[in-house]
Amino acid sequence: MPKTSTTWLLIAAAALIAVLPLLIGSGSHLEEPFAGADAQAKETVTEIDGGYEPWFASIYEPPSSEIESGIFALQAAIGAGIIGYYFGVVRTRNKLGAAPAPPSPDAESPTSADLGAGAEPPAAGTAEAESGPAER
Image (spheres, rainbow, N blue to C red):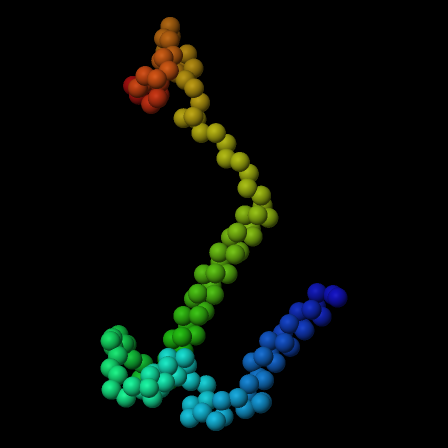
């Protein structure tokens, strides 16, 4: 199947998933048809125990449900952006191929030019051998 027809089928499926609950009237028996899980949980707890008091209060209570939905959508968009950026970076790194890093100059063993004329390289196990030649 060509890529364009697959793309259009996926867009149509996403639209159907978004519109189908509205068409079949799911949630029409509820007071607030598309309430969030928090509101439904609060309602259920109140039904079970009318004297229940929450342990914590919200830091910020939005003035309307539209603002609350907007903040939630913004949070979801930021999260999707971060996840998308991560996958883009990983894909680009894999596409370009992880070239091995060239060895650093510090990793090479000292030569006689580095040590000075007539100097011997330090013996293995000594502090100077482990840290390299002293800077002058």
